[in-house]
Length: 447
Image 1: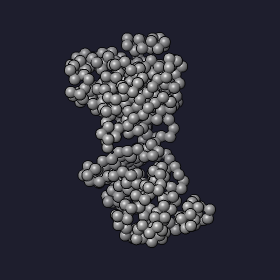
Image 2: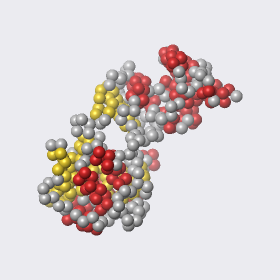
Image 3: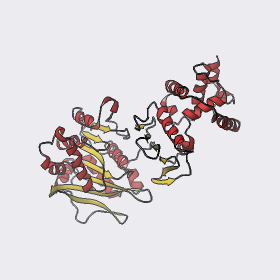
Image 4: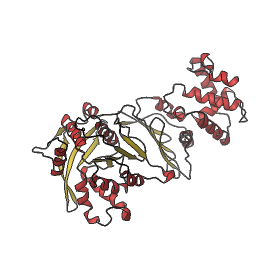
């Protein structure tokens, strides 16, 4: 009877009800102040975490939970645990608040997480916390008391999601239930204590029209990219950190659903990622992620992708030996291959692609012809889209370059568009390279 009364308590204004008023808020502040002095063993805290993980969904426990009663539900569960006598602690408000703050509280990060305009939170060290808004990083006045408190909060966030971070495993990166990504590192992997980065999930999915309306590309570039998707061009999207590579990649996949030229059946898309970030609006997508626990790498996924009847293969980010399998897929006749790669130019992206293919070593499908790798890449990758982030935080397409060939250690590129002095321009007399022109013609798009 007591537990039923607790779960249905919101109808009365009590410390355990939902929607706390000013009185409850004041009481909680007092309890939290007293709670700081309470001694709670690590064994008790672990028991509370296990209980919460077993009784509440991760969607509620997550720091980015959209449930307005997140705090209430966690506190109610903690009180139920104490009422059940599982711990040698009284179910008093002070004890409940102490356990809540030490298991689910976010300390100095609390108000940053609650701010919907914050797209990323970066804790460089305990006294240096940054936030990203509109693509620009800002310093904040938020700070923890010391390195120990920052470490406690970092471990708390990870443990509350059912993961582990400790000296034996000091690096973690995973998705929160809403799609946000949490990456953390603690000693001995860091020098200045715990570091933390939380990238908030974008609930709104960007389309090519959004890129156009934001001024990130011109109408001519949007038209080019739309035709490139319809013609099935193999494309690399390159740029440095936080230039919008994944956002544009997602928009390209989604564009498959809207193009009027796709009247020859459904295009089956396979996406392969280390961390699940791509959420295209296109319906016919099978999405795969790596699993370190099961020994499944991007290379494993890429090798198996060709056996799964794909028309389009997408690797969220190419950064290793999986490049060999992506290249093989592109050259083996799939309808389209798409991937992102960290590089500061189109030339750099292709050179990095070659380096990654070589990393596959004897397991590479091209291991017997390393001297031909440049030519194979040039014959497989049709275009490279290079993105930049400007000082004001805006992302723009800096260039689109088609791949003509490979000679004397460099790729020959033909620019279709460039960002010049803030303006998107197409070089005078531009015509698609032969391979691109053929694909456009085969798709019924002419040149």
